[in-house]
Image 1 (cartoon, protein in one colour):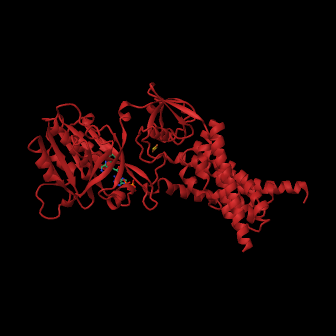
Image 2: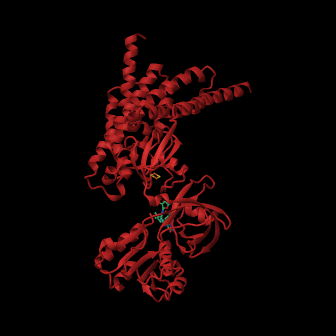
Image 3: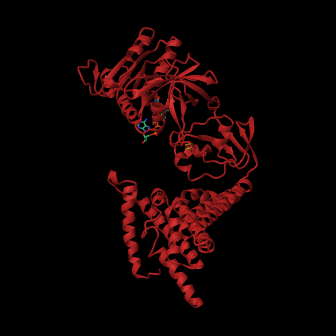
Length: 200
Length: 363
Ligand SMILES: Cc1cc2nc3c(=O)[nH]c(=O)nc-3n(C[C@H](O)[C@H](O)[C@H](O)COP(=O)(O)OP(=O)(O)OC[C@H]3O[C@@H](n4cnc5c(N)ncnc54)[C@H](O)[C@@H]3O)c2cc1C
Ligand code: FES
């Protein structure tokens, strides 16, 4: 494969993980914070940024763990445990560093970190990257793209929910109910991207 | 065999490596050294930084109300931080109104002590202490309400304003959550070595399940307090008490206090229940207070079962029918938020000013 081919491939992975294979709207991973923290655009954005950051770096770390520890010792079946502990340790570490050295980043991003340690989207992305056999750079691109896709979804949802306040919603549907219905519609809208390209 | 050993070793080694990194980071990065907390401008104490303010205060035996155990979901743990709290966190925002924000009120469970910090706590909260007690007696009052009597062991006596509440600690049982829950004191304030609580079982409730199913006479229990603004106002206006079920607790305490201080105010207590089964301690209260105080208790039953003679219907209806002096009187309400809101609207309709309605919502 030539260099430019590789580059195009990376762009495709990144693009498709944002739009056509959006981790939230196509795979429905990471629903829990998506519903709970999508009331305010500002907080949704903060959480979204935290997800982008964590996804990018955990994909990188987990790729290294997988290819340099699990494969050589033929321990691939341990990847669930390994990935989870790597993610947990990484998040914990970053939280401590941010809290210590950057109060500003900590208040805007750090406090969301514990919320997403056990988020299934984070583990999901690492597992998908293994199944799809991405290269190191591909995995990082995939992690980054998935994060951006997740952020895009939650920020749009928060924007929509802000406008919902002025609408009359039947009592039983208020809160999570209407959020799930809207998530369904957004997922339908995202299916529209499927024709654009399918890079898996 | 070898593969198993090898995989176990590798996974453990990897886990240990990560754990090691975290432990080191905790020691070096999350180490904020010694921080000084200045309390009300005059008291200072040093703590090891990096922990939430609430925890630091508890270490100093200063108890701030907290019902969620520091998770940032109850909004009780408000403290005025004059300096050193850092920027407001998104986790605090929902619990603070505009006035509190202007007053630099923060949630002490969310604010971390990372540098010297300057705080203000009202004198009243500083008298809050932790009490180790033994459970001296448990009495069934109805099918879902019990009265608990605790003997104070350390410290051995308590001072509180009648109407205040304590927070009872429910330890973890079979993996349940450790929680503190608020319960109003129901006993005679003159009885300083004991505390009585009247507790209603909440199905699947953490603390009430502990009290009803696990707590035995002779067990050690932990509580802290006193807290709360609910108390008798210092006037001579006639009093209307309205409460059902365990809402009787603070009212019973206030009645004891009125008897001790030979208070001559007129008082009527509307005690509501769904059926006759929900009424309790009526004869005891009559005997104890009707001769010594200008006091009358009016039990009201919503759906009487068999030949009940007495007030029927919702407690609000009984109040509406029989209270004639509402504009001059003061009302003291205890119970669920729903019942309190219903009572407030009836009382204002009868001509009582909202500022004369005092209440404790058991939410
Ligand atoms: C100032 C104050 C004074 C109080 N005084 C008393 C008192 O004297 N006697 C007394 O029995 N209680 C009193 N309460 C209520 C008490 O603090 C607890 O909320 C209650 O006992 C439930 O605790 P739990 O841990 O068993 O239930 P939790 O585990 O907290 O709750 C279990 C479930 O029950 C619901 N729930 C919680 N509280 C209630 C409630 N009160 N009624 C119905 N459903 C509820 C919850 O939403 C949840 O779904 C007081 C509360 C306050 C704030
Ligand atoms: S202790 Fe509950 S919000 Fe702080």
